[in-house]
Length: 333
Image (cartoon, rainbow, N blue to C red; front, side):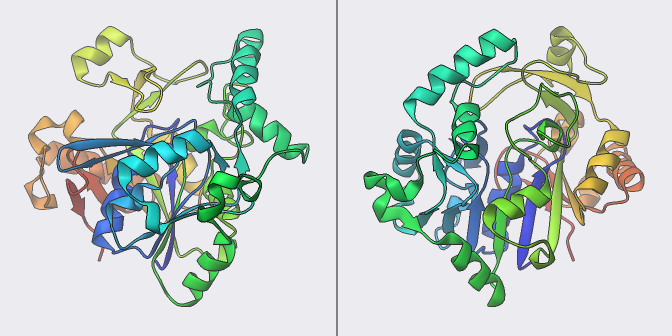
């Protein structure tokens, strides 16, 4: 801090929303900036209530935190207003004037393209919307009348906040292995770069202005749709282990695999991770559920955490032990 990037290590679903919401509360964030697009949701649990957010930053949980949707993001207008009603964040959210808009026509184009190419899609219309932006024909936030009360120059705001030493968090979406350029498994990737550098770039923040990159690992790996998943287990096996999940935003079933230490080391290096968060430790080690002190973990759980640190070369500073935003073991100094 003051500027931190949150990036997912694998194919998404790592629990970034939980880590972001915890940091929003614990570090009293001044700004939380959402990058990416509407085809991925961040899940936040607050006092037993679940929020699956596609547009509004997960930092909304802190009522003093200003929320921004980045210049490089793509906004689905109807979903934005739906989430405003859910989160009651009207007075503190802004969309950068240059964020692009996902229109209704893009969804139909997205679904048709996926059928023709045999590649999975969420159907939100993200790919076609990005195509229009690359062709320089996209509609921008500043062109949409109903968004006028929320349009801001977030690039200036964020950089001024960093200059003033305020706490700024750049919220990445999806997982690094879905990066259009860097993840591998093309064409079974998403429509943009999902790495830490791209997250900063979408928000308009230069690389030397980032103080920390927190890479988020889940204690096992999941992904939706087609494409490679090393070590994949069957749905039946995933159900037995308690690893079977359904995507919060789309309802699609997630495929599962054990934690991949080699992949974790690779993604941590490419993203320049300075810290790691490890979520859902309680799924692998149920006896650890709800623990908030490292000393209270079982010996096997501690050994797993140490192995992650040793094999990635990155300190595990945040450990998730349950669904609530505060079910965290915080090992930061």
